[in-house]
Image (cartoon, rainbow, N blue to C red):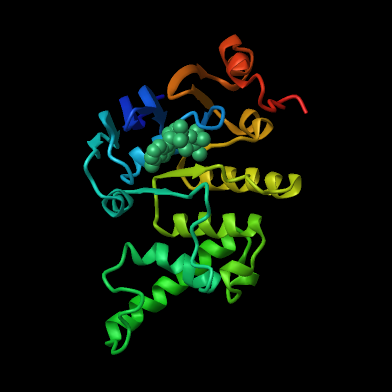
Length: 261
Ligand SMILES: Nc1ncnc2c1ncn2[C@@H]1O[C@H](COP(=O)(O)OP(=O)(O)O)[C@@H](O)[C@H]1O
Ligand SMILES: [Mg+2]
């Protein structure tokens, strides 16, 4: 068997905001095909790290390599273009657009025509539009929301909105998918469905890096867990090892660490 290849290589990543060091000297290596998780108490720097990886923030120091390409300095759309998609902790959907149109926006970042530049379309553009629509519909079906295609995104439950965001990210055709607290606001049944969805995504040969607060879910789903606290990496390993690590338990004191429940 060949060695697993690293798809994402984060080295010495540091991000300062004025006097605050949100991320301090972090190394993370994500292997192709993994479900990797990033956990840590509130304010640990998890979202900032995602923002640095996806081009929304520029790191103060360090390097990020995606499929062996240095991506620091690339814009978010350029990073999406080469195969990295994400969802957001604070859901970012167009609430006044339909569910299907929200997913189509993901695909449009890959196409030459723009969603709203459609006043006079030639035949080629119409074909492309219809291809985008059917591809978006496939992604919606994949996340189990095809029945809600014509609903306004803003009218959906929290859990369903998170699935729309995942469908939109998948519409970009990523090799790596970053999910920022996808189970937030979900009930236990929705969380279980999400776990199944994440497994199905991995079956599509998409690697997953997940930030999640639901410890039970993290321990159940992850191949590899990295723990950060106050910007620093304090532990990394397989779920059981991390769960029993004194430094991790200490970091979570005062937070509801409920992996056993
Ligand atoms: N744009 C910003 N400007 C200033 N400080 C920020 C900004 N974004 C995050 N921070 C700070 O960085 C730290 C880490 O935040 P964040 O990455 O959101 O943590 P987490 O996602 O782990 O809860 C916090 O102290 C937060 O206040
Ligand atoms: Mg966060």
